[in-house]
Image (cartoon, rainbow, N blue to C red; front, side):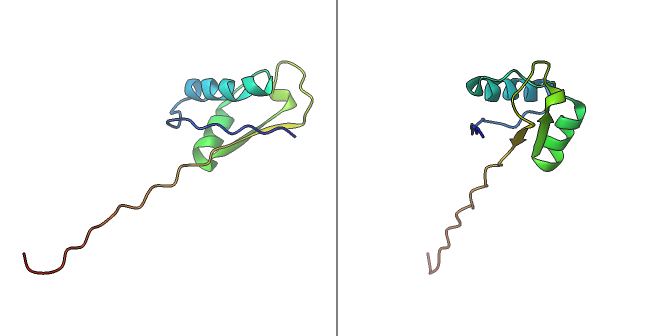
Length: 87
């Protein structure tokens, strides 16, 4: 099993953006890009994950599934300064 983790500045908003992101992930793994369907884009938007089966690739691939999972960056807590006393 191979894995690749990449950090991207922003989540894509459309299928074209997701296709570019997936191409960047597939390249270091020496994989052809899968066909991106509406189903994949919707799953990424709703669940932060999707997977591609062998049928989603035009070329033959040596695995059953290619999973893509988004790990959203945790928002940093806002620092609140409390000032007590008489000014």
